[in-house]
Length: 329
Image (cartoon, rainbow, N blue to C red; front, top):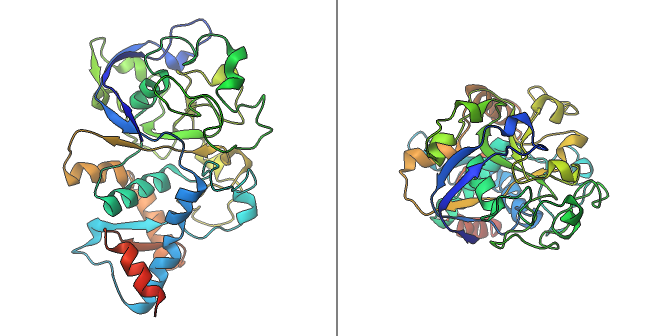
């Protein structure tokens, strides 16, 4: 994790090469926080993926069961991959970005990590992400205005050969964050609204005020360019709207998986995490972690309870020891 100092910045862009959804610029005050130096990798995400098998074994052994009294400490582990060769077609080296997960799955990852470690992790807000990407700059990219220089900093459609690459191979931004302009696109918490910036006050805003909490399944915001994206759309202010129907278009299941996307367009979608310095209540933490729509919860429950795909399980600091004990039986 990299320490991101608090400060003010102008979110969005009024440049001639910017898109309408980046306007008008919004003045935002950002508190200090920690952010992942890299995108979450397969080595890290596969530990989370493995929980499906772990929780299945706990169920077989009738241990660590989820009840109404302890369900606040439960997560839903993603179902086993329907077609691993498809999900990993962009590569699955341990230090490549993990990709193809839904925003809900990424949020459940942050809950798992938080309950395991005792620290509060979550996805960044769109404001936090852009602030960290810019690292104090006001230029189109965090290295300047010339897109010809992007090869030194990012994997884009011009140099990635349509594959993600091992994280941290390019130059970092001024605050030490890698791959902010490319490699994998990154989930943030916000719903995508093309006119969102226009609804914000002209005064100095907080990151809580600029966060567009989702009210519908999609679109949601992806940031950071990717191996599929042209340098022109990898700028610090660039915004990408998810199209979840298209991202799940190859999924043969009904309902579609709430944890995994299944289309070629999804294999460039990953995430990185933040750890705020400010203390928040457990109730507020849950808001950052859980499904934000009843339809997502319904799909998760149906997949687990009726189809046996995916699993629920309790997470706490004792989980690793419980896993080790379970292997001995």
